[in-house]
Image 1 (cartoon, rainbow, N blue to C red):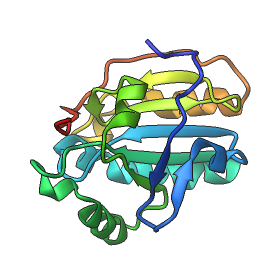
Image 2 (image 1 turned 45 degrees about the horizontal axis):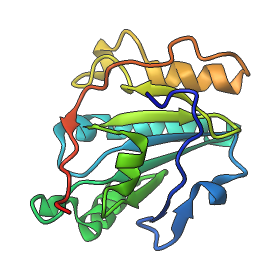
Image 3 (image 1 turned 60 degrees about the horizontal axis):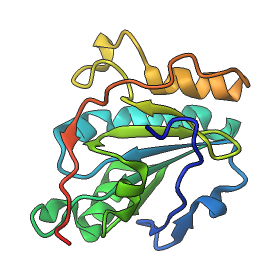
Length: 176
């Protein structure tokens, strides 16, 4: 497991047209990388929560980057063009990056959408797992794991819960 290891670097296109690498986020205190996509019902259920996390913690130094590594040949809804449409329609306030070869997902050993990785200022992975414990209903949430880990890091505390089992669909790997 990658927890407490240095996060693998990446350079991926964002729906804004910019190219984003970890280095380009050096002014951020912490980074939440969430592997996601357009078509997964679990990701769809979390989009509002992800947007609110970025709104709540962005000014405190958080950057959220959602990375879509899914095969867009088998799942056309996950294409870069469809990503741009979704980001605009939903008013994403976070980065939405395309990992066409799924190399970044492989480097992170990601398996699910959504699956979150929280990086500290040294770009060490301090949390890996689910966003919270109730994907289908925000009102049913008892543990907001990613949010709690964000608060721990921003308060310069050790992350209390370093890993949880992700809840979601499997990444749809492109054929090599």
